[in-house]
Length: 137
Image 1 (cartoon, helix red, strand yellow):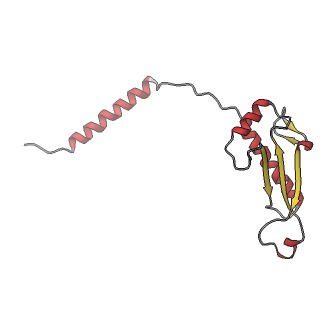
Image 2: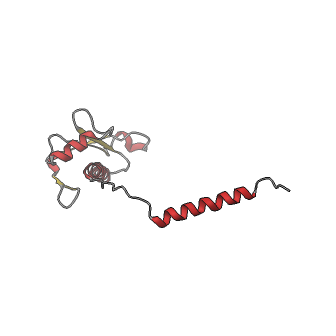
Image 3: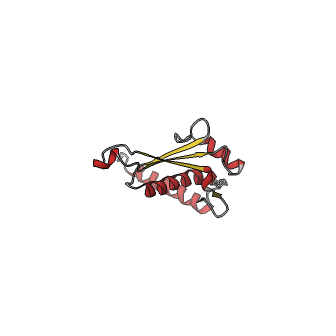
C-alpha cells in the first residue's frame, strides 16, 4: 500500500512489480541476480480520482507511455527490497506533483512608501550623474 497523502492511498494490487537484471558493472553477481525492479502503474485503471488521472496523463514525463502506464526502473541499490522502496518513492513523487494544487496569484500594487523611496533614489542618482558632467567656468 502506497500512501501519497492522508486521504489518497494506492493499494498494492494496482502496482505490478517485476525483478530484472540490473545494467552496468557489478562483478560476479551481475549476470546471476535480478536486483533491479520494474514498477508498472496503470493510471487509467487505477482507483485515483478522475481529476488526478487527467493531471497525471497531462504531465510531459517520459516515464508515462501513450497507454497511460507509468513505468519506473529502479536499479540504484544492490538489493531488490531497496530498489522496490526506491521505485515506490519515485511513483509517490510523480503522483504528488500531479495532485498538488497551485496557489492562485493575486495581483498586488507597490506601497506608497516603496514608490516614494524608488523615486527618491532615482533623483539622487540623477544628481550624482549631473555632478560628473563637464565643469563650466
